[in-house]
Image: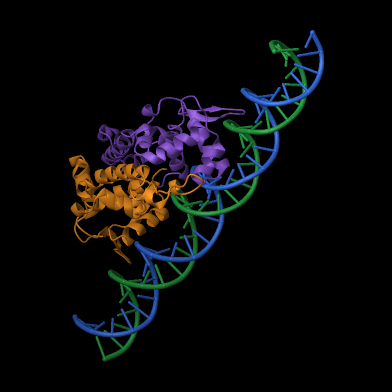
Length: 155
Length: 155
DNA sequence: GTCCGTTTACTCGGATAGTCGCTGTCCGAGTTGTTAGGG
DNA sequence: CCCTAACAACTCGGACAGCGACTATCCGAGTAAACGGAC
């Protein structure tokens, strides 16, 4: 039970792309070098973000990746879901209905309590991630760092 | 990113053990049959719970597992942590300090914003799981089911 | 009848294979900018 | 000088190995009960 390493990469790269001028694509190799990541494998993760409609990929010279919509409309949950899949962390196997102690369907009209608590916990986790946008992550960078990155991406 | 299947087994078995008379151990095979689980592999998970001090294992005839402390003092988080490990779901690799865009240590006095949000989300998740005890799970069973299980375990 | 030693059966525990998904890498498809040639 | 067409370089995209963790299983170590015999 741990998140893929690429989640951290995706969030940081999205926050970095938020500092690029609108419509400008950033090369994959640049982001990989900027954060010291393996170039090819980073592409694997950015692909997933592009498929999810979070990033837009531009091929050819002057190509790269740009945000598919304003950074203020991209939450951390969006990035995590795109990279980890939308499946629940916990999937109830309904073991209460199996084995020698199986409950009859009449007793299982109400959802499994264990599953309910797990879902509630996961919702709390998701809500926290949904409450933070990529734009906010970019804004919370130190001012000088933000300016430096904007200069690197703008030129 | 998904929980081990054994988590569900562990929680249900703990809730079942909460219905057994104090001091009485329940055989592993009984629990496996009760929920339709693979006997040997269930043992692997119960071992982890025993090592974590949640269950107490009793060898020999009339042996089995019993709760190591009152069910009201065992939370779902305890069970999950025992089976999945205490490591964080997200581990910040501090990529902001690596690569060509590495930040100087002076800029990294404050923790990484991404890491902070991830920790906050995970704390929300953990808090929800910590708020429910195994005793409550057992109490929320339908009354007739609870009585039936108590009778199965008591005799 | 009581006590003790042996036997027996039963339970958990760790060590051992199999499978799936994440990690890491490579080369090909597609697009754009460039450049050379002709009008 | 301008237009066109072919070329070349650069970018992402999907297909191909490597590794670790979860899944599944088996047999041995240890224990408590039961049983038989002696006193």
